[in-house]
Length: 438
Image 1 (cartoon, rainbow, N blue to C red):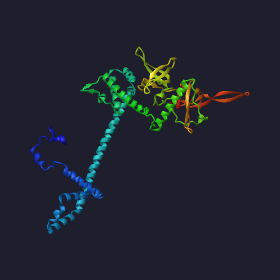
Image 2: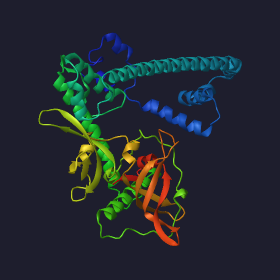
Image 3: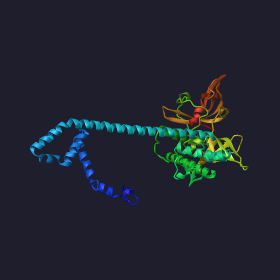
Image 4: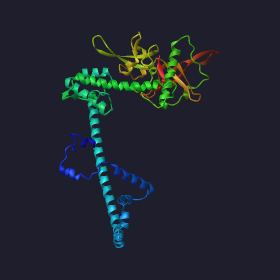
């Protein structure tokens, strides 16, 4: 290395013995580079030859062996050739032994590297398992600033430090979190341990960086105007989000005509879905998909006490930025609507909650239907009547009264119009973003 010959390097001040020993060392790498060039040419000309043949050709060329042999007297030349012929078998034997030794050393080195890799992986697995257990002891992974404050308030001084250490190390070693400032993952600096406030600030920086990365990915998806989304899942959710916006516009304006569908498609022809549970939550990719969802909003009162208010998202206000719109929410037990922003949802101040049968029975909903043959979809409103008796408690079916479709019923020669009663698994539609609460 060049640094070895600079001031302070191991060859900066050498002894006389080293100078004498290295007197014949080449000052450049021209000669070995020329040798490798010859090897490359010979290997191209004789691709099936052995290493011993390549070595013999190069040595014969470099040493000018042919001219040396031709200058010998006939008797001496014949003696040399006889010696070369007799030593052929011995040279091949030595060559094979050398190859076996090289293979043995190579395999030994590979085995040592594999063993070292396995020890390292096992050590990392043990560390990750220990971090998982530590994080579980302190209430799981803290995902938002609000959750960090709540968890720290419930711990004492020593446990706060241990909990923050576990959260930071878990995000670094298990989740692979990154941050421009690598010091946020440290527990101390210059031999001085960080305080609780410093550790909390570092953890919040890591969480903020993770949220920024998630927002960047979301913005990349949202800013693809006119470009087909990669993958069927994103394309499906983008289409559903557009249908949600159209449905909300139709429902929000009374004098507007609702979109008409051409022909009648039986609702029992809807595509079959994978069975889901009530505990599953919808996947929110676009802000529009929050409309009609059940959420819980974290609020802090004047006395400093925190409370969660459960409610239903009624609409999205389009006047604000499309990346951070405001949402209208009505809390359970309150008549007046309130507002929250999409940033509140991304930072965990507003979270989705699991639904139950109580959330459906007696409620007015809007449901998305689709005709796979004609590639059409539409939204219809209706009223949930009750739970079908005998259905699965974890994934029940509901009787649903469609307020848009009507059947003709003949009673005593008089024709009356009555609503259509259907049976659906509404939990699945809600989780798949095919159902919203009105």
